[in-house]
Image (cartoon, rainbow, N blue to C red; front, side, top):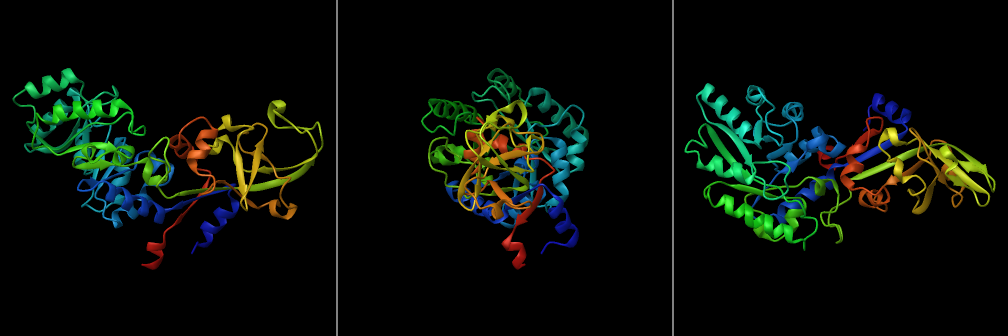
Length: 378
């Protein structure tokens, strides 16, 4: 039940973003089953892909998840009070220089990506006179994060390479896992196995969301789903086994009739070929509704697809609602911009991007509400 203040904010908002925590739980259960004997973590970076890390973390902790990943130290500091002490929070970017003490103070575990980070963590362990937990990431071919091959050799050649480090996992990251037939997957797996063979007793983590849908050889001891938790398809070309998580509804501000030859929006990017009914909706690129969908986007109203026409503005879009009864698009009416019939991956294709960008762009002006049957019953 919404309290009065929340209900007032909802009424004042230009758009409503509904996050289905029950669907996130179901997606986690599916991923955990696919992972077999590997532990299943959850990636909550960028505020759980823009959907609310505190709410998502609580729901997944109820499902038994005890390993959580964020990108930045500040994200970990913010998340730590939201989770019970039995949950591990790993920071993917590791410690910025001279921040090792903050990891200890806030109960966070770094992913060490460079020899400098390894040295800094070992030095802090020495100062505290105890071993400190960490993940070490190695680069298996993505050339983005982790120890490069020559650095791995130098690290493993040092007889004190693990001095002061309680190594939780050896980790790497797949570049093309959403393309199952891409030969890079097998090449990265071979490289990762060769490095792990030099640390035979160390648990390993390799598979991201898409990697979970590769053969079990890729799973190792811990999988790290992110996007799939939030309903994004793990395979670039196959059907999507994940449940839809997000519903974005914009509010109609006003409607008007335009005649043949009339224009819509900045730069007159739409010209009517006949009389049309146009609705202006209170969502724009300031809310994360990407401007390059101008004249390409779609809304769903009672199962009917209506085209977005004209340029997307900072605060509004315009829809051709000629196919709808006037009362259905009266001021205050809701239209679906993301929904099960028009999911985030479809929106992303229209915007010539990926679902990750669509979700993480959804801005703070959107009123957020959460569907959570489990909590409602507790």
